[in-house]
Amino acid sequence: IAAPNGNTNRTLTLPDEAGTMALQGGAGVGKVLQVVSVYSTGGASTTSSSFVASGHKLSITPSSLTSKILGHFHCSQINTASANTEIRVAIYRNDSVNLGEMATVLLPTGQMLTSISMSKLDSPNTTSTVEYEFYFRKAAGSGSVYLQQDFNIVLMEIAA
Image (cartoon, rainbow, N blue to C red; front, top):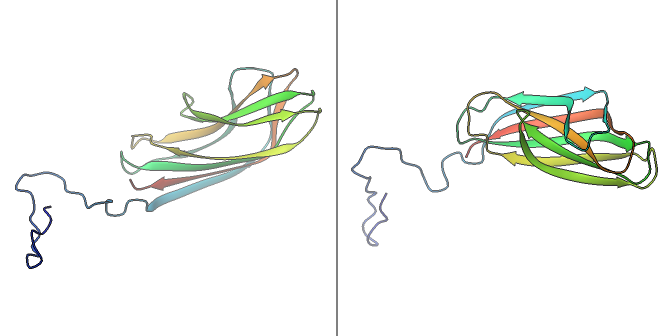
């Protein structure tokens, strides 16, 4: 679309070629298209220094290739039986794509409890079902690390 070329010319001129036209900022950009959520309970533990799946996950099927997925993830309790143990948590897409590690927790004494919340914005570039899952690992220290209690996951498809 060409800008008007004067104060008296208010005519919009459309391109003379076939194709897709988008408004600046895009019509509907940022609109929430769908929301899915899950609440689950149960624990998971590991002694691994590599990320392992927790079993707490949720799927969403984007309606467009350009959609973004905004995920909010919360675990109400993480702990360890060993002092000075570091736990790292990540969110994985489809068991293979690490969307980034977050929430390093160094527990100075055994059985210390804390919670983890994180948000991630993803661009899966698909209209196939996409699954997001909590992964975790022991980054330092000895013994097992635990994700326990309540898990909440909320996924929102955002128009882009």
